[in-house]
Image (cartoon, rainbow, N blue to C red; front, top):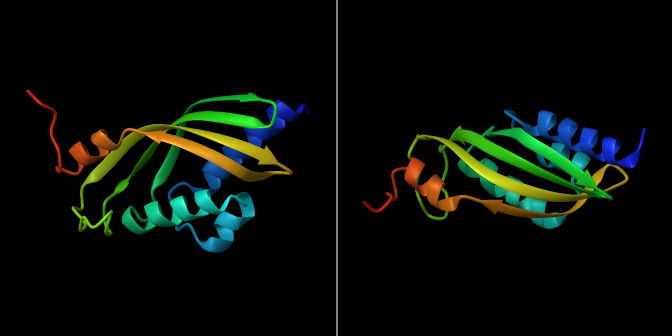
Length: 127
C-alpha cells in the first residue's frame, strides 16, 4: 500500500476511534505524540464530552493529511470561562496532520469559532 493511502487510512481509523467516546489519555496517546494536539483534545473534551469528529473530505501529500471536518457535541462543561449551555454544536473546520510511523506528530487547525459562539447563543450575526 502506498504511503498516501496508508496515512489517510490511519487518520480515518483515528477519527473513528475518538469520535463519540470519552477521549482518555491512553486513547489519545495511541494515535498522537503532538503535545499541543493532545492538549487541544483534552480541552475540547472537557467542554463537549464524547464529541464526534466527522470527515467531510480528506487528502494527502507526503506525510501530511488534510481533513475538512466537523466537530459535533453538546456543551456540557466550561469553555473558556463560559459555563455549560447544554446546546448542541456542529462546527466546521480544517485540520492538517503530519503522520510518522502511524502517529500524529504535528498539526494545525482552523475552525469557525464565530459559528461556535452563535450555536451556543453567545453571539449573533449582525443584521
